[in-house]
Image (tube, rainbow, N blue to C red; front, side):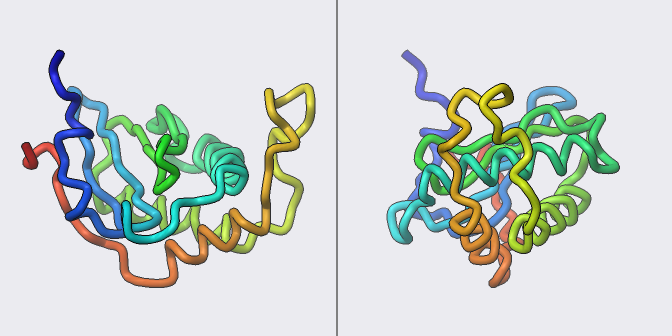
Amino acid sequence: MERITSFSVDHRLLKKGLYVSRIDGDLITYDIRMTQPNVEPAMNPQAAHTIEHIGATLLRNGPYKDQVIYFGPMGCMTGFYLIVRDLDLEVVKNIVKDVYEKIASWDQEIPGAKMEECGNYTYMDLQGARQAAQYFISSPWEHQYHLLEEK
């Protein structure tokens, strides 16, 4: 079996940051690495779930909503994947910074956190989400590292 691209990247080299993970035609997958893999603690899964709900809501209601395909957590809980269509890195940097700043100061109801809206609606941690988002934006993270170049 072929090893998938994301497993071909040496995670010992990754820092907190925003990376191009893969390009498939007009779709670009960005790796939003919120913590340094295998060095810093991973996110609390409830906080990640909360970030997913708030972030997806903001992205799908924002100015680039037609270019946003997917936003969701990595299984390792060190970050998120953002899949977009026809948006370059500079635009995505600004979008990500804006979304995470809003999550860090979120003081409203968590979108989609009702029984009829979510399969695990009580599995939320707003305070943890706010702290994780603040940690991510609290230091420079504009690393540009093209994961496709690592084999």
